[in-house]
Structures are given as C-alpha cells and as structure tokens.
Image 1: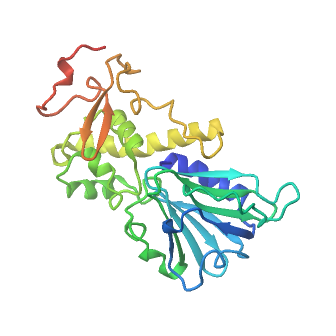
Image 2: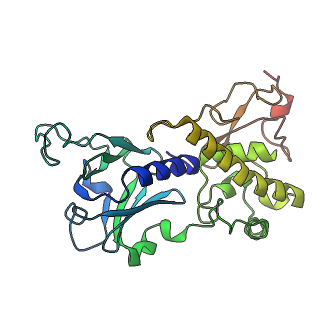
Image 3: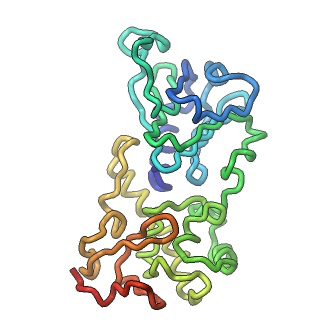
Length: 296
C-alpha cells in the first residue's frame, strides 16, 4: 500500500491536478467497498460537486467536496491511486462507457472530473474502504477518528513522543506501527526508521535508554522527509511505488549498504521486519542470534 511518503506525493499531485474541478461521473466495480454514511445514494451523492481540497491524514486520503461532504479512502494493504484519461476523451461523454465492458471488482472507485482526468482507486485484494460522509460525521469513520499524532506535524515533539513511548510494553516496531499512537507508519518505513536509529525491531519499548528514545524520535521525521524528497524527485506516476532507495526494507539477503552484513528478515507480530544484525544489534537473547552468522 502507499505509505506516508508516497501519500504526500499523491496528495501533492491530486491537489495540483483535480482540486477545484467538478465531479462529472462516479462509479465502482465493487459496491462492497463503499461505506455511504449519508442518505443520498452513490453515485448521485458525488456527481456535480466540486472537489475543494485533497489532504492526507495519516494513511487515509481525504477529499473535501462542496456542500460539507467528505470522501475518505483507507487503502489498507494493496490499494493504490491512478490518474488516467477520462472516458470522455476522444469525443465520448463521461457516461458513455460500453455496457459490455464491466469494471473489474478491483476498481473500488472512479471519479471522472470535468475536463479530465479520471481518478481511480484500485485494490486487488479488496480490503480497503471508501467512506462518504458529512464533514460533521467524519470522526465516526473507523480508525480515522482515532488516529494519533502526525509525525510530520509540529505536535510531534520530543516530549510528546516520550510520553507516548513511556506507556508502552510492546516491541518498538509494533509501537511505531500503532496508528492510534502515530499516524501513520507502515512496514517499510518502520524498518527504515529502526535502521536509522540503530535499534533491533524486537527491542522492547520499556527497555530503551533515554538516548535511544531520542534517537528514535529524531529518526522518524528525518527518514520520512528524506523519503518524501526522493519520491518527489523521481516524479513517477502516483501508482508507482518507489522503494529501491530504501536501506533495509525489501533487501533481505543483500549486503547492508553501511557495513556489508547480510540484511535479515525476522517475524514481528503479523509481519516480517528487515534489519541489519550489525547496525541494529539485539539488546536481548533471541531464538536466532544473527550476529553469529556469516556476514554474507
């Protein structure tokens, strides 16, 4: 799924491309992903409204529409956003899509804007959700209304972070990925942040020294802003996931770019974490002591 740095780039591009335009048509290939929290049915509730603003909030993308309406998308594990030429291009009307060509169920939502383009939210696993609500009710959207502090906001101070982590007894990677604490860090950047801070992903939060907590706090915005800058520099289409510059994520079995030790993957919670056993030494005895294995 797109993680926070990807979403900042997507936010930039959608704000530049479609903000201020009116919705000419809307459709879905799978009505089950829709959560319409207003009385007016889809797609009529969206058609004819002007898109006022696109903003990221945590891992959600929020579309503010005129009339006090919001459309909020949670892309979950496999969702992605695409900008494509509108069906009306080439002389057809926005609603002239051939009835013989049914949208795939992976198409969670398509919005056709006046003068193009078409924004598509696509989810091959069909796990994400699309919420339509009034701005007054958006806090009722699951998870969205309980998101923690944004790590790129001025509220993400050393003191606020220290207060959050002081309450934790879980492993540090699981803490980083808790969206109620921090909005929102995913698998890839949890690994990158821990590498930058020199912390093993299975380290328990309550075992961290004050200097380690400070290092972790400092690494979070540094890693995220660095990734945002690189993704913006690449300027790939918004459906392209740029990951080849990452230090450890996706590099299991390859040499660490800092010390040459083989990057390893270890199970943490429900997923795998990639780390360097030398740059991120374990603070306690684990089932596998990666530090005693060959470097490569």
